[in-house]
Amino acid sequence: AAGQAAEGGSERSIQELRQARKRFKAKSREEKRAKRKARQDHAAQSRVGARAVDHVHTPAVRVVVVGAGGWYASQVHLPQLAVLERRTAMGVPVRVVGVVTRTKEQHQKAEKRLGHAVEWYPDLALALASEHVDAVDLLLPIPHQGEAIAAALRAGKHVMSEKPAALTLQEACSLMELWRSLSPGAPSWQVTEQWAFKPAVQKIRQLVDDGAIGA
Figure 1: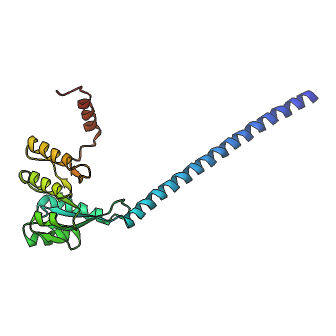
Figure 2 (figure 1 turned 120 degrees about the horizontal axis):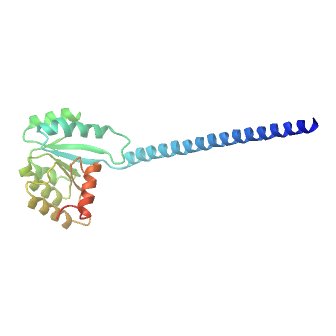
Figure 3 (figure 1 turned 180 degrees about the horizontal axis):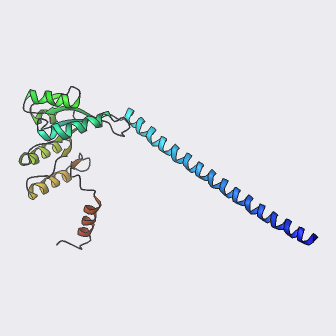
C-alpha cells in the first residue's frame, strides 16, 4: 500500500512538473510575442517619425505641370498631385508651383484643381529658365514630347513624362543618349509606365535579359 501511495505521489509530481513546464513555456511564448510586437511598434513609429522629420526639413520638390489645360492633366495628374501635396508623412514633399498652358483660363482651372494659386507660364521656355522650378510633369501630345523632354533635361530639370517616351524608337534612343551624356549629376527622368513593376512584366524582362526570348 505504501508503495502504491509513493508511486501515485510520483505520478502526480510528474504531472505537476509537466503542467508547470507547459505554463512556463506558454508564458515565455507570450513574453516573446509581446517583446516582438513592442519592437515592431517602435520600428514603425520610428519610420513614421523619420518621414515626418524629413518632411519638415527637406525642401519641397517644386513642380511645373506642362500641358495642364488638357483633359488628362485636369482629370488625373492635377488631382493626384494635389493629394501628394497634402501627404505629410512623405520623405520628399512635393509642391506644384506653376503650370504651362495656352490660356489664362486654363491656368485658372488648373488652380481650382490644385486648390491653391500657382504661377502661369504661357511658354515652356519660361518655366525652364526659372530657378524656382525643380521638375516638370510633361503632358504634351506625343509628337511634341521629345523636344520638351530634351529641353527640360538640358535645363537641369527633373522630368516626368507620359508614355510612350517618344514618337519613334530612334527619338527615344536619342533622348536616352542625351540623358546619359549629362551624367554624373543628370536630372531624373521617369516615363510613367504604370505596369513597369508588375510581376508579369518583370518576368518578361528577366527572360529577355537571360536570352530566353528575343533576338
